[in-house]
Image: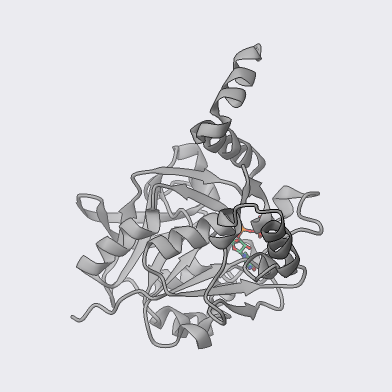
Amino acid sequence: MTIKPVRKAVFPVAGLGTRFLPATKAMPKEMLTVVDKPLIQYAVEEALEAGIEQIIFVTGRGKGALEDHFDVSYELEATMKARGKSMAAIDGIRQKPGSPVYVRQQEPLGLGHAVWCAREIVGDEPFAVLLPDELMVGGFLRQMVEAYNRVGGNVIGALEVPDSETDKYGIISPGKVDGRLTEVRALVEKPKGKAPSNLMIPGRYILQPEVMRVLDNQAPGAGGEIQLTDAMAKLIGDQPFHGFTFDGQRYDCGDKAGWLTANIALGLAREDLRAPVRDFIATLDL
Ligand code: UTP
């Protein structure tokens, strides 16, 4: 079996972000900041650190701020230069000219549908999918790519959640476990009743292009949306399929509590912010 390298990453960013209203009424959810960076930038940096060469955004209406964020801001750069200010903060955001690709998902019909909208750009090679509202600290995609380079096929993130939360996520039915790799026997989106395990899929995927052929005909599933989980499940048995356990920190920033937690944790992790944030927390009567 030849294992083709993962060069492309798809970022589905066309969702409506209804859990974060009113912040997301006129602003993309993926532009919410944690400390001083928008969520999308954390995800793009994670992908670049994993060796990804081509960034593909699946956007929708009202997501213009996201495209501008990865573009050159002439006014800002000219002003910073004229004032003798460091360009370090904005230099990191620049992509090679012509490199990021934007495709549109005309209607938010679900994550599976959003990924399918990138099929022409993905072509016939394995690709990563990163959901930017899941903020991962610790280089999750890089670790997944390393595991993929050994076993090939499909490698998806796996994270243990309490039993009470399994009905909110795509859940793995596990087979053999080998270190941080778990064989995937089946996948269930938002299981009602008893879940096959408490291993959820935390928004990171390395998939073979055949999933696009499944998505060509995928019917809506849970919540009336076209689910990526349902399409991936159909590859099991035909291709190697593993879950990979993350050894790092995940913040669900699509949710207000998760986003607030991320701001506190990442604020405390920053040398320039630790003292004032810690001092404020110390004054709280909890
Ligand atoms: P979510 O379900 O977390 O995002 O999808 P949402 O629908 O925007 O949020 P809520 O639940 O209404 O608050 C996970 C990711 O998939 C993208 C979202 O933008 C998010 O990054 N997505 C979801 C799409 O691109 N298209 C869709 O049709 C659905």
